[in-house]
Length: 244
Image (cartoon, rainbow, N blue to C red; front, top):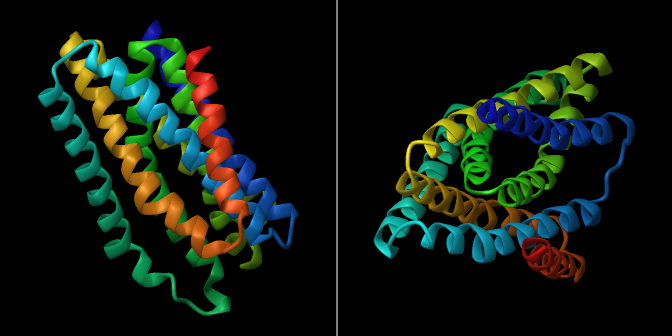
């Protein structure tokens, strides 16, 4: 029953962020880079707080430092593999002309669906450790998914797809987060050591997302102070949230 609840929560938070982003992409013709940069940097600060003040301390209470380091390295490697898979299989097709925008949007959605699975694993293993940790991870990942939803919806809509179909595909790409949460909950329920490795795996995966995706993308979108403000605000709110 607990695994079922965890899966539903992972599914909800995984689809909510992308769906919200999809709605913004469909109904707002111009989404400012300043706003997207703030959202990305805020999510990165929130994630760093969760990594440093929740995931790793929780894992250290359950296992030794070497187990934690192994989990972190595995998480980083898994996310690098996902990124390489998306780049080699899909990104080469994204330099398409305007009349192929629809195809571009679908390609992006497939790539992000693959990318969302490890995020679901993080949510599932987090809930196995504690409800508070699981919710914190889910919210951070949900915020991170908003710009992804926008990146899917805009080319699909501009390519002529009906809005209801765009929203359907956006929601579908987030379903893999729920699948990942299901497997994360199963793996985490085996033993305390497995929970510790799962939590540190999640920490490694999120560390790569922050360092390799969120911060570089945020800085490329907007060069002003808003990205720094978002990062600091996310970290401060994240520290407060992890202590409640």
